Image (cartoon, rainbow, N blue to C red; front, side, top):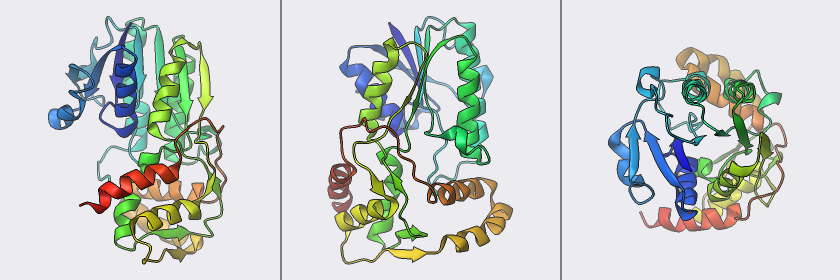
Length: 288
C-alpha cells in the first residue's frame, strides 16, 4: 500500500510521516522546496518537490498511489508572514491535490481539518477547512476527515513569548478547550486508513481553560514573569485597522478572538498531556 503525504514538513505532517514509518508503510513525502528535506530523510527516502499552489506541479502526482494524506494548512501563527491566504492554502491547494487524486482513482484520502469548522463560516480559517471537507465528501473517494480543536505544536510560539514576558490572556481566559498532541493525532489519522468514509473529532485527554494553557507555558519557562490580561473589546476595536494593514493578519486575529469566546472541546482521545509536552519543549527552549 503506497501513501502520498502532503504537508510533511509541518508538525502534524512530520508526526504522520513518523507514524507511517513505524507501521511499515511505503510513504512518499511531498515538500514545497528542499529547505526542509533534511528533516524528513530519516522518515522516508521518497521525497517529491512540488508546489501545491501550482496545479502544473501536481500533474499526475497521485498516479500509482493508494492513499493520499493531506496535512496542508496555513499556519495561524502571527510569526507566519507568508502571503497566501487561508483560502489559497486550506481550500485551493487541497483542491489541487484532490483533483489529481480523483483523476488517478486514489482509494483513500485523509484530510486534517478543524474542529467545529462548520460553526464559524464567517471566519476564513474555518470556512476554508469546511468547504474543502464538503468537496472531499462529495468526491466519491473513500475519505477520513480528522478534526482536532488544535495541536500542541500550535502553542510553541508561546515559549518565546513567555521568555520575554509577552504572554497575554484575551478576555477572561475562562473558555475551555482540549488541544491534542500531534503524535496522538497521527495515530488517529493512520488508524483511519481502514475506516470507510469517516469524520473523527479528536481532542486531548485533558480539558484546560485558555488561561490555564498560558499559565502552564509561563510556569515551565519563567515563573517570575506575569501574564497580562487584555480586554477582548480592545482587540475588536483594533481589527478594522489591522485589516487595512494586512488581510492575513486580520483573519488570524479574528480567529483568535472568536475561539477565545467559546468552549471548543472535542472527544477526549489523545494520550499525552499538554503539561508534559510543554515540559519537554520548555527544557529544550531554556537550553538556548
